[in-house]
Length: 219
Image (tube, rainbow, N blue to C red; front, top):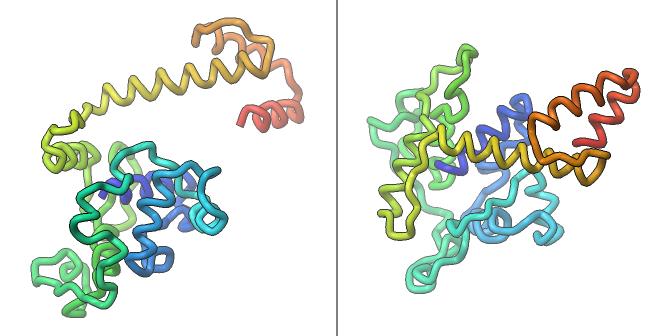
């Protein structure tokens, strides 16, 4: 569910381009590939991925999280890549897939899971746009609560309210941008307000061509 939220945000941010979708049977067609996604992609920086994964998952970011480390308990039970790819899951009559028109009585496990997640909207929260599809909305805070319950607080992982994470992200991004300008341009302040005034003067002194080059260099 968390990866579906990530995927939905990536797709929405990039103007709904399907190329940023990776939770589907076209990309992950067996449990071995799902194992690769968890343990060789999401927990490795792009530079540290092998050539195949760097090419195939070029749009999937590195997630600095212990969720994707190989757990000791997996050595005692069954690893993801040891699951049977040939087993199907039966669709109960109450399944959302039945409600949206699926006529099959069962589906391959991965296909069922991906289509089940696709039946919900993970990306429209906080938007004023009209939904093109009648899909149930999944609130991001609900996922936080789910993670809390699964984790049981034992590792100190407690859901952080949105307004706090928004503040943390805003501060981190502002500091990173200011530092980038200090490294690349003649700017000597750590203040975000000073940075805004500096950029305001800096940009408007350029002609159109220079503005484009300036934006390119910043990105």
